[in-house]
Image (cartoon, rainbow, N blue to C red):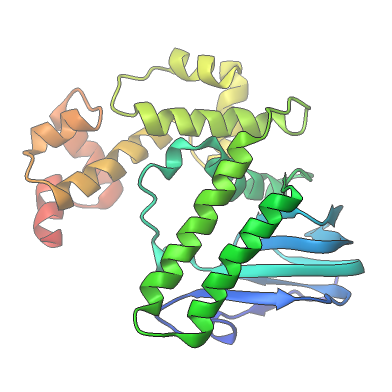
Length: 293
């Protein structure tokens, strides 16, 4: 395999303060040499078909397909037939979208977190497929995003971010509306995505392993193995990180006392909360609040 070209952010993002860009490929050419980049890429297939290669795995894509490529994933298009697509390039660490309650949608986790990770680590070909109507609506949203970035009128960073949030929310809803597919390949996506959504909605409650097993419909060994493969940590460790993240937001935005913050995010013991918060963030909750004031 030839060397993989590493694309740099400065090659694509015009504004260093807004790492967001729309690239249109109305007649995509054959691309046999793989490339990768640190930022993420939302791929929208408008028409035609092609062979998409990610790492050593290849699969067929066509009109209506939508999928996400994470940073560091190498890919190319070794075979194309009338392929027209849109790439929305974005750096999630730089944009820091206010997700609010988006995490309660299983489709958000499936499209932007679970599927791309499975595609990176194993032979996985599933992806979101939009109807003609949905594809047309999405194309309109992308056009508004593209116009803000290209024309950059006053306030365009705010407006461009808003349009991108609309796209992410729309696609998450589209994925959530898909009837649950229970094939062997797709099952882990729906199970883990449903579980992530459940944890987002119920993190304040005293969740136990048995609760998570019932939601995921998996054995304990399968859940721990699959969850760690996709999310990089155990379900309970993920829950602790989720609670600490919610606590960080409360410490910045509210005047609740530390014990009240601990209770609000699901920790029964405020001392245990403080220890976990310090382990994850490197500072105590009190010091974190002082630094963010």
